[in-house]
Image (cartoon, rainbow, N blue to C red; front, side):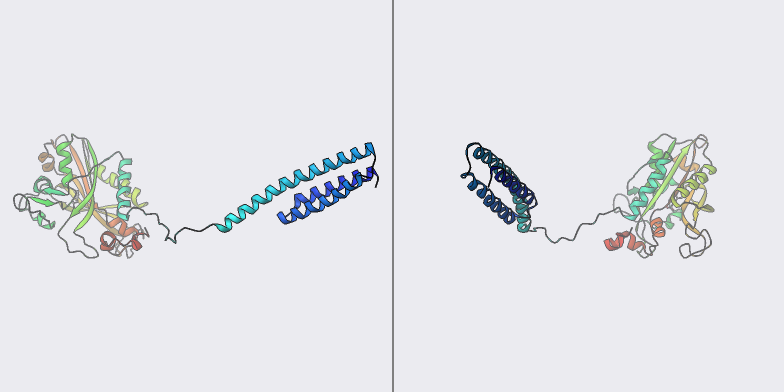
Length: 345
Ligand code: PHE
Protein backbone atom coordinates (compact mmCIF):
# COMPACT_ATOMS: atom_id res chain seq x y z
CA UNK A 1 0.00 0.00 0.00
CA UNK A 2 1.23 3.49 -0.79
CA UNK A 3 1.95 6.03 1.94
CA UNK A 4 -1.11 8.08 1.06
CA UNK A 5 -3.32 5.00 1.12
CA UNK A 6 -1.97 4.10 4.55
CA UNK A 7 -2.54 7.64 5.85
CA UNK A 8 -6.10 7.58 4.50
CA UNK A 9 -6.71 4.21 6.09
CA UNK A 10 -5.48 5.43 9.48
CA UNK A 11 -7.60 8.57 9.25
CA UNK A 12 -10.77 6.78 8.24
CA UNK A 13 -10.26 4.10 10.92
CA UNK A 14 -9.92 6.83 13.54
CA UNK A 15 -12.93 8.69 12.15
CA UNK A 16 -15.19 5.62 12.14
CA UNK A 17 -13.99 4.55 15.58
CA UNK A 18 -14.63 8.00 17.04
CA UNK A 19 -18.27 7.96 15.90
CA UNK A 20 -18.77 4.41 17.13
CA UNK A 21 -17.13 5.12 20.52
CA UNK A 22 -19.31 8.13 21.22
CA UNK A 23 -22.38 6.01 20.51
CA UNK A 24 -21.18 2.95 22.48
CA UNK A 25 -24.02 1.79 24.73
CA UNK A 26 -21.87 0.08 27.36
CA UNK A 27 -18.33 -0.81 28.36
CA UNK A 28 -18.35 -4.12 26.45
CA UNK A 29 -19.23 -2.39 23.21
CA UNK A 30 -16.59 0.22 23.90
CA UNK A 31 -13.90 -2.43 24.36
CA UNK A 32 -14.99 -4.19 21.15
CA UNK A 33 -14.68 -0.96 19.14
CA UNK A 34 -11.26 -0.28 20.67
CA UNK A 35 -10.03 -3.75 19.68
CA UNK A 36 -11.33 -3.26 16.16
CA UNK A 37 -9.61 0.08 15.66
CA UNK A 38 -6.40 -1.26 17.27
CA UNK A 39 -6.34 -4.06 14.69
CA UNK A 40 -6.95 -1.61 11.89
CA UNK A 41 -4.18 0.71 13.06
CA UNK A 42 -1.83 -2.24 13.64
CA UNK A 43 -2.35 -3.15 9.99
CA UNK A 44 -1.39 0.40 8.99
CA UNK A 45 1.69 0.16 11.20
CA UNK A 46 2.67 -3.07 9.52
CA UNK A 47 2.60 -1.29 6.14
CA UNK A 48 5.19 1.23 7.32
CA UNK A 49 8.12 -1.14 7.13
CA UNK A 50 7.70 -1.41 3.32
CA UNK A 51 8.07 2.38 2.94
CA UNK A 52 11.06 4.65 2.56
CA UNK A 53 12.33 7.70 4.53
CA UNK A 54 9.89 10.62 4.31
CA UNK A 55 6.92 8.38 3.63
CA UNK A 56 7.64 6.41 6.77
CA UNK A 57 7.60 9.41 8.98
CA UNK A 58 4.47 10.84 7.31
CA UNK A 59 2.53 7.64 7.90
CA UNK A 60 4.03 7.27 11.37
CA UNK A 61 2.84 10.76 12.23
CA UNK A 62 -0.68 10.12 10.86
CA UNK A 63 -0.78 6.91 12.85
CA UNK A 64 0.19 8.73 16.02
CA UNK A 65 -2.54 11.35 15.50
CA UNK A 66 -5.11 8.63 14.83
CA UNK A 67 -4.13 6.69 17.98
CA UNK A 68 -4.26 9.78 20.20
CA UNK A 69 -7.65 10.78 18.84
CA UNK A 70 -9.07 7.30 19.40
CA UNK A 71 -7.64 7.06 22.91
CA UNK A 72 -8.96 10.46 23.98
CA UNK A 73 -12.48 9.72 22.77
CA UNK A 74 -12.42 6.20 24.23
CA UNK A 75 -11.22 7.47 27.64
CA UNK A 76 -13.92 10.12 27.79
CA UNK A 77 -16.65 7.69 26.83
CA UNK A 78 -15.31 5.09 29.26
CA UNK A 79 -15.48 7.35 32.28
CA UNK A 80 -18.96 8.43 31.24
CA UNK A 81 -20.14 4.82 30.96
CA UNK A 82 -18.45 3.92 34.24
CA UNK A 83 -20.30 6.72 35.98
CA UNK A 84 -23.63 5.53 34.57
CA UNK A 85 -22.82 1.94 35.58
CA UNK A 86 -21.86 3.03 39.12
CA UNK A 87 -25.08 4.99 39.55
CA UNK A 88 -27.13 2.03 38.34
CA UNK A 89 -25.30 -0.29 40.72
CA UNK A 90 -25.84 2.02 43.69
CA UNK A 91 -29.51 2.35 42.89
CA UNK A 92 -29.76 -1.44 42.77
CA UNK A 93 -27.98 -1.84 46.09
CA UNK A 94 -30.03 0.83 47.86
CA UNK A 95 -31.89 -0.43 50.92
CA UNK A 96 -35.28 1.11 51.66
CA UNK A 97 -35.09 1.77 55.37
CA UNK A 98 -38.26 3.87 55.70
CA UNK A 99 -40.67 2.36 58.18
CA UNK A 100 -44.23 1.83 57.08
CA UNK A 101 -45.77 4.84 58.88
CA UNK A 102 -49.35 6.02 58.99
CA UNK A 103 -48.60 9.49 57.65
CA UNK A 104 -49.26 12.55 59.73
CA UNK A 105 -52.36 14.66 59.66
CA UNK A 106 -52.29 18.35 60.27
CA UNK A 107 -54.36 19.33 63.30
CA UNK A 108 -56.59 22.36 63.57
CA UNK A 109 -58.36 24.42 66.18
CA UNK A 110 -61.44 23.04 67.89
CA UNK A 111 -64.67 24.36 66.33
CA UNK A 112 -65.48 26.26 69.53
CA UNK A 113 -62.03 27.87 69.53
CA UNK A 114 -62.46 28.79 65.88
CA UNK A 115 -65.67 30.70 66.66
CA UNK A 116 -64.16 32.17 69.83
CA UNK A 117 -61.28 33.61 67.76
CA UNK A 118 -63.64 34.81 65.07
CA UNK A 119 -65.66 36.72 67.67
CA UNK A 120 -62.49 38.30 69.02
CA UNK A 121 -61.44 39.30 65.50
CA UNK A 122 -64.78 40.97 64.78
CA UNK A 123 -64.71 43.04 67.98
CA UNK A 124 -61.02 43.89 67.69
CA UNK A 125 -61.93 45.25 64.26
CA UNK A 126 -64.49 47.50 65.98
CA UNK A 127 -61.86 48.77 68.41
CA UNK A 128 -62.82 46.67 71.44
CA UNK A 129 -60.41 45.19 73.97
CA UNK A 130 -60.48 41.48 74.72
CA UNK A 131 -60.35 40.46 78.40
CA UNK A 132 -60.30 37.21 80.33
CA UNK A 133 -61.35 36.82 83.93
CA UNK A 134 -61.54 34.45 86.87
CA UNK A 135 -63.69 31.35 86.54
CA UNK A 136 -64.02 31.11 90.32
CA UNK A 137 -65.94 34.18 91.42
CA UNK A 138 -67.36 35.69 94.56
CA UNK A 139 -70.99 36.45 95.24
CA UNK A 140 -70.39 40.18 94.89
CA UNK A 141 -69.19 40.07 91.29
CA UNK A 142 -71.40 37.26 90.05
CA UNK A 143 -74.61 38.49 91.73
CA UNK A 144 -74.73 41.32 94.22
CA UNK A 145 -73.01 44.07 92.21
CA UNK A 146 -75.07 42.97 89.22
CA UNK A 147 -78.16 43.99 91.14
CA UNK A 148 -79.14 40.50 92.29
CA UNK A 149 -79.71 41.19 96.00
CA UNK A 150 -79.53 38.19 98.37
CA UNK A 151 -82.67 36.10 98.04
CA UNK A 152 -83.56 37.69 94.70
CA UNK A 153 -85.57 35.16 92.68
CA UNK A 154 -83.38 35.74 89.62
CA UNK A 155 -80.54 34.00 91.46
CA UNK A 156 -82.53 30.81 91.39
CA UNK A 157 -82.66 30.99 87.58
CA UNK A 158 -78.93 30.47 87.51
CA UNK A 159 -78.22 27.05 88.93
CA UNK A 160 -75.07 27.93 90.73
CA UNK A 161 -72.20 25.61 91.52
CA UNK A 162 -70.74 26.76 94.83
CA UNK A 163 -67.16 26.17 95.86
CA UNK A 164 -66.58 24.92 99.39
CA UNK A 165 -64.41 27.86 100.39
CA UNK A 166 -64.89 30.76 102.82
CA UNK A 167 -68.39 31.62 104.02
CA UNK A 168 -71.18 29.37 102.67
CA UNK A 169 -72.39 30.29 99.19
CA UNK A 170 -69.87 33.11 98.83
CA UNK A 171 -67.42 31.50 96.40
CA UNK A 172 -68.76 30.00 93.21
CA UNK A 173 -68.02 29.04 89.63
CA UNK A 174 -69.20 31.99 87.58
CA UNK A 175 -72.64 31.33 86.15
CA UNK A 176 -72.11 33.87 83.36
CA UNK A 177 -69.41 36.20 82.03
CA UNK A 178 -71.30 39.26 83.38
CA UNK A 179 -69.19 39.49 86.60
CA UNK A 180 -66.46 40.78 84.28
CA UNK A 181 -68.64 43.84 83.68
CA UNK A 182 -68.15 44.66 87.35
CA UNK A 183 -64.45 43.83 87.40
CA UNK A 184 -63.79 46.09 84.40
CA UNK A 185 -65.80 48.99 85.80
CA UNK A 186 -64.05 48.60 89.16
CA UNK A 187 -60.58 48.72 87.65
CA UNK A 188 -60.80 50.81 84.47
CA UNK A 189 -61.88 54.38 84.03
CA UNK A 190 -64.43 54.69 81.23
CA UNK A 191 -64.76 54.82 78.29
CA UNK A 192 -64.79 51.02 78.20
CA UNK A 193 -65.27 49.02 75.03
CA UNK A 194 -64.59 45.41 75.93
CA UNK A 195 -65.50 41.84 75.18
CA UNK A 196 -64.94 38.94 77.53
CA UNK A 197 -65.15 35.43 76.12
CA UNK A 198 -64.82 32.62 78.63
CA UNK A 199 -65.94 29.45 80.35
CA UNK A 200 -69.06 29.52 82.47
CA UNK A 201 -70.65 26.94 84.76
CA UNK A 202 -74.14 25.95 85.85
CA UNK A 203 -75.63 23.03 87.70
CA UNK A 204 -77.04 21.23 84.69
CA UNK A 205 -77.33 17.58 83.82
CA UNK A 206 -75.40 16.96 80.61
CA UNK A 207 -77.52 16.12 77.59
CA UNK A 208 -77.68 17.10 73.93
CA UNK A 209 -78.59 20.69 74.79
CA UNK A 210 -77.10 21.16 78.25
CA UNK A 211 -73.66 21.13 79.69
CA UNK A 212 -72.50 22.16 83.17
CA UNK A 213 -69.51 23.84 81.51
CA UNK A 214 -70.15 26.05 78.52
CA UNK A 215 -68.84 29.21 76.89
CA UNK A 216 -70.18 32.72 76.83
CA UNK A 217 -69.06 36.01 75.42
CA UNK A 218 -69.85 39.26 77.21
CA UNK A 219 -69.74 42.71 75.70
CA UNK A 220 -69.57 45.88 77.78
CA UNK A 221 -69.59 49.47 76.58
CA UNK A 222 -69.47 52.41 79.00
CA UNK A 223 -69.16 55.93 77.66
CA UNK A 224 -70.95 59.26 77.71
CA UNK A 225 -74.30 59.39 75.93
CA UNK A 226 -74.58 55.70 75.03
CA UNK A 227 -78.13 54.80 73.97
CA UNK A 228 -80.16 51.75 73.06
CA UNK A 229 -79.53 52.79 69.44
CA UNK A 230 -75.80 52.16 69.96
CA UNK A 231 -76.58 48.72 71.36
CA UNK A 232 -78.82 47.80 68.45
CA UNK A 233 -76.42 49.18 65.83
CA UNK A 234 -73.47 47.34 67.35
CA UNK A 235 -75.36 44.07 67.45
CA UNK A 236 -76.49 44.56 63.89
CA UNK A 237 -72.93 45.09 62.63
CA UNK A 238 -71.69 42.20 64.73
CA UNK A 239 -74.37 39.74 63.56
CA UNK A 240 -73.72 40.60 59.93
CA UNK A 241 -69.99 40.09 60.39
CA UNK A 242 -70.64 36.72 61.95
CA UNK A 243 -73.58 35.34 59.96
CA UNK A 244 -73.81 37.42 56.78
CA UNK A 245 -77.15 38.79 55.63
CA UNK A 246 -79.25 38.47 58.80
CA UNK A 247 -81.44 40.60 61.05
CA UNK A 248 -81.29 41.09 64.80
CA UNK A 249 -84.45 40.86 66.92
CA UNK A 250 -84.93 42.35 70.37
CA UNK A 251 -87.80 41.13 72.54
CA UNK A 252 -88.50 42.68 75.95
CA UNK A 253 -86.98 40.62 78.74
CA UNK A 254 -85.58 40.94 82.21
CA UNK A 255 -82.11 40.87 83.69
CA UNK A 256 -81.42 42.50 87.07
CA UNK A 257 -78.34 44.28 85.73
CA UNK A 258 -79.80 45.86 82.58
CA UNK A 259 -82.76 48.19 82.13
CA UNK A 260 -84.37 47.98 79.68
CA UNK A 261 -83.42 44.40 78.90
CA UNK A 262 -83.99 42.37 75.78
CA UNK A 263 -83.75 38.84 74.60
CA UNK A 264 -81.48 38.75 71.59
CA UNK A 265 -82.21 36.66 68.50
CA UNK A 266 -80.81 36.45 65.00
CA UNK A 267 -82.88 35.68 61.92
CA UNK A 268 -82.13 32.13 60.87
CA UNK A 269 -79.10 32.30 58.54
CA UNK A 270 -80.09 28.97 56.99
CA UNK A 271 -83.65 29.62 55.83
CA UNK A 272 -83.94 33.44 55.74
CA UNK A 273 -86.82 33.29 58.24
CA UNK A 274 -88.94 30.86 56.25
CA UNK A 275 -88.56 28.19 58.96
CA UNK A 276 -86.34 25.14 59.01
CA UNK A 277 -85.13 22.41 61.34
CA UNK A 278 -82.27 24.54 62.69
CA UNK A 279 -84.57 27.33 63.88
CA UNK A 280 -87.35 24.88 64.88
CA UNK A 281 -89.57 26.40 62.15
CA UNK A 282 -89.62 29.78 63.92
CA UNK A 283 -87.28 31.72 61.58
CA UNK A 284 -85.34 33.03 64.59
CA UNK A 285 -82.53 31.72 66.74
CA UNK A 286 -82.25 32.95 70.30
CA UNK A 287 -78.68 33.72 71.24
CA UNK A 288 -78.64 35.61 74.54
CA UNK A 289 -79.54 38.73 76.40
CA UNK A 290 -78.73 42.41 76.29
CA UNK A 291 -79.71 45.77 77.64
CA UNK A 292 -78.66 49.15 78.96
CA UNK A 293 -76.45 48.89 82.05
CA UNK A 294 -78.69 49.46 85.07
CA UNK A 295 -77.89 52.66 87.04
CA UNK A 296 -77.65 50.55 90.21
CA UNK A 297 -74.80 48.59 88.61
CA UNK A 298 -72.97 51.78 87.63
CA UNK A 299 -73.36 53.02 91.20
CA UNK A 300 -72.07 49.73 92.63
CA UNK A 301 -68.90 50.42 90.61
CA UNK A 302 -68.71 54.05 91.74
CA UNK A 303 -69.68 55.45 88.35
CA UNK A 304 -72.10 58.36 88.20
CA UNK A 305 -75.16 57.31 86.15
CA UNK A 306 -75.74 60.98 85.32
CA UNK A 307 -72.40 61.07 83.52
CA UNK A 308 -71.94 57.55 82.21
CA UNK A 309 -74.19 55.14 80.45
CA UNK A 310 -73.61 51.91 78.64
CA UNK A 311 -74.87 48.70 77.22
CA UNK A 312 -74.03 45.06 77.69
CA UNK A 313 -74.85 41.84 75.97
CA UNK A 314 -73.93 38.25 76.51
CA UNK A 315 -74.61 34.99 74.80
CA UNK A 316 -73.48 31.41 74.47
CA UNK A 317 -70.61 30.74 72.08
CA UNK A 318 -71.25 26.99 71.72
CA UNK A 319 -74.55 27.54 69.98
CA UNK A 320 -72.75 29.01 66.96
CA UNK A 321 -70.55 26.04 65.96
CA UNK A 322 -73.53 23.77 66.67
CA UNK A 323 -75.72 25.69 64.25
CA UNK A 324 -73.05 26.21 61.64
CA UNK A 325 -72.00 22.61 61.43
CA UNK A 326 -75.43 21.10 62.03
CA UNK A 327 -74.17 19.25 65.08
CA UNK A 328 -76.97 17.72 67.13
CA UNK A 329 -75.35 17.37 70.49
CA UNK A 330 -73.48 19.73 72.73
CA UNK A 331 -71.82 16.71 74.34
CA UNK A 332 -70.37 15.63 71.03
CA UNK A 333 -69.09 19.12 70.36
CA UNK A 334 -67.64 19.86 73.77
CA UNK A 335 -66.76 16.67 75.55
CA UNK A 336 -66.45 13.55 73.44
CA UNK A 337 -63.25 14.83 71.84
CA UNK A 338 -63.47 12.16 69.18
CA UNK A 339 -60.95 13.23 66.56
CA UNK A 340 -62.80 11.33 63.85
CA UNK A 341 -65.67 13.73 64.50
CA UNK A 342 -63.66 16.92 65.13
CA UNK A 343 -61.45 16.38 62.09
CA UNK A 344 -64.39 17.37 59.88
CA UNK A 345 -64.46 20.99 60.96
N1 PHE B 1 -75.49 37.18 81.65
C1 PHE B 1 -76.76 36.95 80.99
C2 PHE B 1 -77.00 35.43 80.93
O1 PHE B 1 -76.11 34.67 81.14
C3 PHE B 1 -76.79 37.50 79.61
C4 PHE B 1 -76.70 39.00 79.57
C5 PHE B 1 -75.45 39.63 79.47
C6 PHE B 1 -77.84 39.79 79.60
C7 PHE B 1 -75.38 41.00 79.42
C8 PHE B 1 -77.77 41.15 79.52
C9 PHE B 1 -76.57 41.77 79.44
O2 PHE B 1 -78.11 35.01 80.64
